[in-house]
Image 1 (cartoon, rainbow, N blue to C red):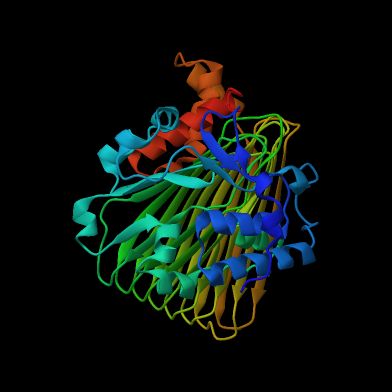
Image 2: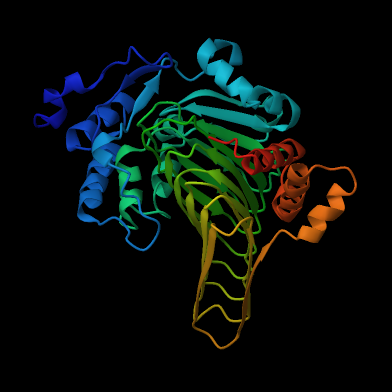
Length: 468
């Protein structure tokens, strides 16, 4: 018989949230074994997952907060709510989503995008998915797209257990351990061998509760010869207290398979975005990242790719916009383990109104990665003289038979270009926004049309200082 749990004494920590129309329950602030056990009980976890959570919590308490990036002193975990359940259970019918939650997602354009250009959609509100659906013709191909918690307890339980937090281990860093302890929600995707999903799948994450954290876990397995484009969108309203996003993405790309993972993050500027993303690519596989980062007070975001198989490839294309009060530390990492692998990292950053943008890249060429190629290119655009941009590349090459390069550029908007556009009847504000949108074109052209338009609208709002 199980010994008395910490949670037996703190059932009072789950209570009705009367002042939040969309929340049903949340756990108390802070992080204790009792709270972790309560989350596990709410989720109806299998025994191994509850144990995994508690072991992750122990690791979390044993690790220090990173001291090399932007300061996160304003993030006090004793005042972060780690689990908020909305007043809704997951449904595959949009009509069954509660009106107040539906209104939020409709303003974000989720149902419209699903009808126009998506093979399936998952929508998470705070700590739980409230909507998940996949087109019948996609499901008929054997493609599995469901919430991770259903997969954890259903017919794909063994597959989830074999892959869950195997790429991103709790011991990797403090916030990976935090994620392992309190994760909730997220998506599971499996694409069978040889299946090509010709239109994207999407998950959208909305953190609506003040002073809360969101810890969704995305697990995608693209089997041999398969092809998938997955889109992730994120947003949150602005509050005057800190919110935390510490999600995790694990991607497994099989032999000769291809996965494109696109992200548009529009977090509010009270958000600490400490997300971890990692991909493992087998022989001949291709991993493509497309990333747009707008918002958050502080970001630590460096998607990592492990090129394990011979001839595997990776491309990373990203744009970061740091405005007033923002310190965005972003970049990408790649490890070349297999021979004849190749990677290309191409990022652009924009700094405005005192915003700080830091680009970090890490390229490792292993001793068995002969004939591998790696190139890194980063460009920064400074819109005033009070902002800051830094580039911190790292390269570790352990074979003499590799081709590795890095280039960096920092510039500002040309007065001549602004004058030229103004002479054609365009206002100065619109002229500058057009130039910045052109600077970010390498990312927008990689996105489906609806998302490219959304990204350009975000840039225009940032230029006007209108994003929360």
